[in-house]
Image (cartoon, rainbow, N blue to C red):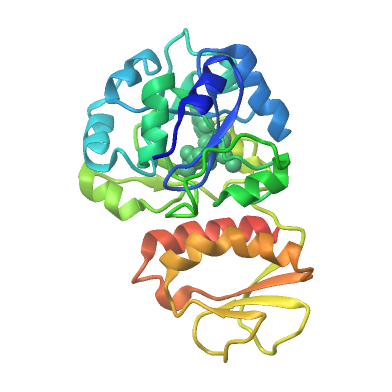
Length: 308
Ligand code: TXA
Ligand code: MG
């Protein structure tokens, strides 16, 4: 079994460590140590006005961060935690302003990953943005992190992540809950559990203080990203197709499996850069929307941001 002791010791001494979750790898730091949290922003090159998610390993830890835990949050925690759902709640005054970027709310989630939960049980709550340099695709395996931060960067290796796209971010502080970032857990599922409507606001481009992360460009490879109908195959382009083309080195078929495309998308973005493609072209996903509504919404959100 993997010995977590060195990673636990680093985190306890105020250092940053990358660790796996079920979505993407996080860049962890002790949520109560301001100098550790600062290191996260510095290492990523992340703007200070983009707040971080607090990762916990048991529900009791919520009480140190959230000033109120509404019934809706309890219902969602019971249904979806541990899992890829981040809840935005009113924060306690003692939560570091660095984490929340001065907002009066805090983002919290309990990741569904054995190593992450084991780690956090020993260290206490960790802030963890995706473990990529700002503006780069989120890392879905340790190699991505070493590429961004150097070969000696401390990474707790859990292999490739299962989901591959970041968690659904749900704001519970407004009268009607709002999805600020779509993910594997979709609007319909959340509505079914809550028994009430949920809004979605993921395409917003303003600097609304409600969704600070949305105004920054994200998830971008160096290659340009295109989405739509494919009419011919060019050699300088990496194609992610559904079923209409014969496979070749630069044509990868997903057969309408949007879960698999989600899992591999960021790795394909990075592959395109490493192999020198000028473009990544993703064939339209509309035919598979009904079968994979949440993945469809999350994928088209990430693809449209990368294509900006
Ligand atoms: O799946 C995930 O959520 C991954 C893994 C590591 O847990 N983490 C992740 O973190 O994607 P990050 O920092 O890359 O994205 C966090 C998002 C950002 O868009 C940020 O603006 C938003 O959550 N966020 C954080 N705190 C917020 C708050 N108080 N109000 C509104 N949005 C917030
Ligand atoms: Mg990120």
